[in-house]
Image (cartoon, rainbow, N blue to C red):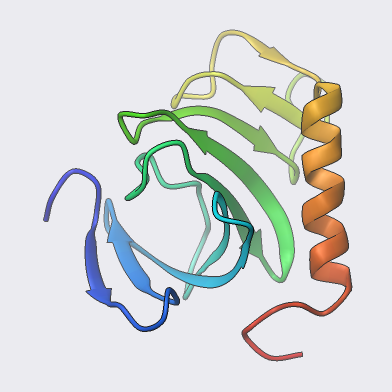
Length: 131
């Protein structure tokens, strides 16, 4: 398997891919840069790499955003917003490294706008996976 994940099935931009032993399903897209993905089974973490440069993944767990992950031109995760747990009392919060240690912050205004856009999309029922 390659470092950016190996794709198992590609069908009209709705694809399943494997990243570090985790299998994700793309369930929707917002524009050309944001993909909403979910893990088929088990616990969920944001992929370490993206198949596409400068991608944003909104990662769902139980149909709610668990992470919004941002990737650079080298397909590497550079920022991740965590929604489902507290970090030193802050929820949601932003990490700037894969280990989620060291520096973290509250959401910027741009992060808040993006989060609202994704939540609005999900609330309108624009999910491609049922409901």
